Length: 173
Image (cartoon, rainbow, N blue to C red; front, side, top):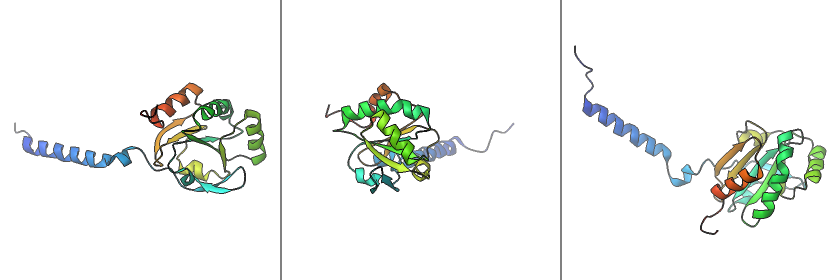
């Protein structure tokens, strides 16, 4: 019985080619950090128009939330506590999505949130980020690249660990 006509040398050559393609697909360190944060504009709770580009040069935690989302409500005090502790090093923004402004404002007062807040009434940023569940939290490095995403409820300790792991400079600690 005759074996396949493909030689061992050709198989090795194909393996080297596949490895080269995989390495090329991995790209530079910049690409390895993750995709760039979407730069769609949005309105703040104060009525100003801005975008996430306004945060360039600063690590950022982006949290999508809504007043009709019980896990969102549950995690807001934890987000606020961590924000208070790392505000000099990491910026936080809560993007209220597909919600009414009065309901969102009422929840902000109830939870005592002081970090930056934006409106995403039609879910455009929600879709641009590829959010699949509520709440969702994204960790963006100072270069504007998403370095981690957390779907669902995040606890204070999880948030602290993820901020430490992905956003804070270990040499500065």
